[in-house]
Length: 391
Image (cartoon, rainbow, N blue to C red; front, side):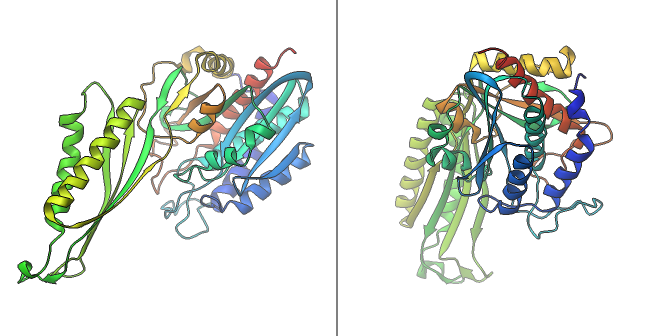
């Protein structure tokens, strides 16, 4: 492991920053404290700071030697609206139902470490744009920053991001060209019937039989209507109805998500989903209220930039920890919005050790591994120095 010496010297401080962020998690578009600390640190290192992107997002700008090229480095800052179960941690979340369960506290800290190093050394030709983004968790903070003119005001020739990988050994860098993460769509199905006494169901209009048929039919879409060679996931995470054992409910609500890797498959699932839900609701005579939202596009790494990120990571972690055969994952990332506007790459960095364990993200017992901080920061820094080595 060839972590940059100067960044390795920051490790204790970076750990303090990360644990402070962890103890004070803020969910999407509420990252006021977090972005304030980030801005204060950047300014203390002589980095230009610009606020007002995506509500609580901000930009840092570092100028190196004279040069025309500009690289964007992105970190997400938001936490999840869920309780933390790590009672043994002295830096456990101090906010009820708020938790850094996806490692964004670590991502923010890694980019801060890289920013400090790049500001102190300025060993590159051109400009580095530091993107500290809010609201990655389902709220499309990246799209909001772009709508606020991020790339018009701070254009990037290339853009890069890192996410921790809870299931890969510490320092393993998974990077390759092509589609690495899925497109994400969300839906809410509300069925309205007519309530009645459970002993006289014929006096009402029970929406539950329709809801059960819709649930089953949607699962059959994946197994019977889609090409088995295409990756499609449809999951219903909530199914809510009723308040009593002896009352036919008036309303049933289901919420869920669809994940796909190809644009054509995404369109096909959209059409089949609407057709299925609408036809079954009509057959049962219940009122349908359907909210279907297209969220993140697929995250697609461009070949040249994936190769550049791989080279930088290889310089830091060594050949044995480079993984270029990671299959496409059905998780989603709003980093995809940046990749629709500029070439770039998204890399996963493993954080698992026998001591730290392998707790999945979005789990109440997850915690970012602080040993990954200097590794991620070094990968960002090496990338800049290699890509901006000339004019």
